[in-house]
Image (cartoon, rainbow, N blue to C red; front, top):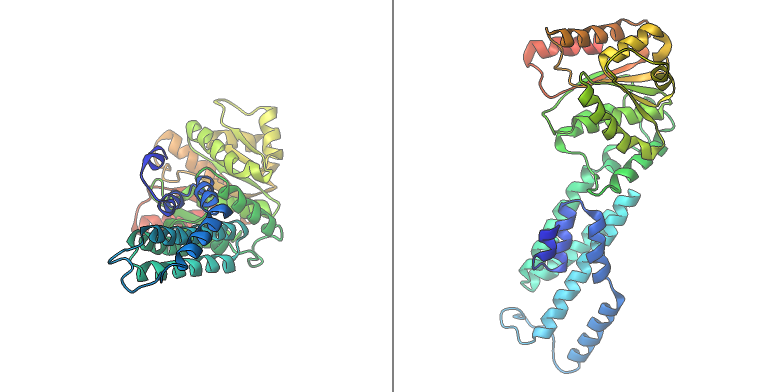
Length: 358
């Protein structure tokens, strides 16, 4: 942002940069300045004064500019149109209103046509890029990709949870208003509470967001979630990430990743918290003491699924998963496995079959 503030950018260029960065809070500033009604009055007065003296429009208005102040007014008018369109688009993302995003794009198309006719290249580029960007953002946005009224596989409480989830992500410093291409296929299955699945995506490709959608659907159904991570350090990181997402929705996130045993406090967390983050060892201790702790859990997320192998820790992880799959109530509980590194071909098919169908 320091570079943007120091750069010699026009209002539309600066606004477009903030939109690309998803910094919607910063985007409001250039919009509010440009939409100042006093500046609009000044443009009208200037145009009225010029029109009294000469014909303002000619075929070669920009090839042989004879009225520099007039061109400044035209440029300002295009900037005003541009920021008005962005203001409408921001309202569309807040409300999830497709008609508003269509109105914003139509306004930008009108500005694009005017800029092309007058050979105002910087303004033309800003309008053109923003049209493409808004179209892409809307088509991949949570408003479009997360149905407001999905089929019966998601509980009736889904609508309220969905609205809070989207609003919370929109208010982040870097607004998270859309799904990445790498997430879209998995996201379409995330809302089916009866669909066990394995999500294999590279590091930083968005596995956690897919898991959050699975968690959201489970919470909307009135059931709790256990998120299993094989390492204590990873459990601490996961706890912070989930708290950031689900505490604004009024949900509690607790962790069980101490080194030894399970205390009474840990068991209370397992019974009462909406989302529990635990290592396989801690979860195993807790379930040995009280197998009924999972009765109200509707989803088990297994992070770093590729850490199932031949070492002692990896074998313990596999054994814990096998115990979950062998429980008599296993079919009432969804399992979602996340991994950045999984084998291809028959090995992947075998692994997926084991987790999703035992």
